[in-house]
Length: 120
Image 1 (tube, helix red, strand yellow):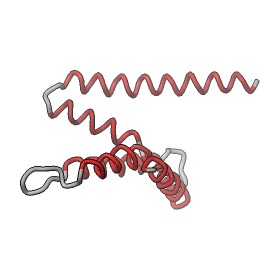
Image 2 (cartoon, helix red, strand yellow; image 1 turned 180 degrees about the vertical axis):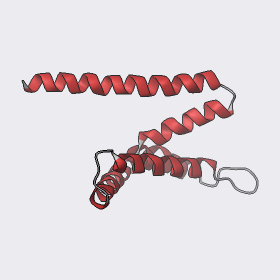
Image 3 (cartoon, one colour; image 1 turned 60 degrees about the vertical axis):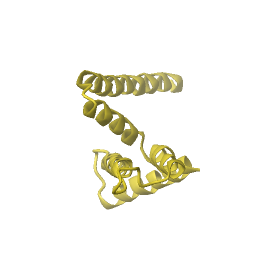
């Protein structure tokens, strides 16, 4: 349910940005990724005065994993990378960035090439 809500919000946000500011760069996607990361960071870091997570565990997972995971997976990736950096695992954080971006870009290029070949 959360993923469906996040996906619908992404669709509306991306198309809204493109209608307001059409451009060759994917500003709609960038806006979704940045706002998703901001919301992920805000919700993950929000604590009570006693230091406990402000949100109940079920609601927290619904919002972080479900809604924001459906809105943008970039927010989860960014939160995981931040956690690695905060824990002092700087090489692992860098590897996460390089592998995620490199492999995902390679995968999308491969998929694009395969699907383009199927149309021929």
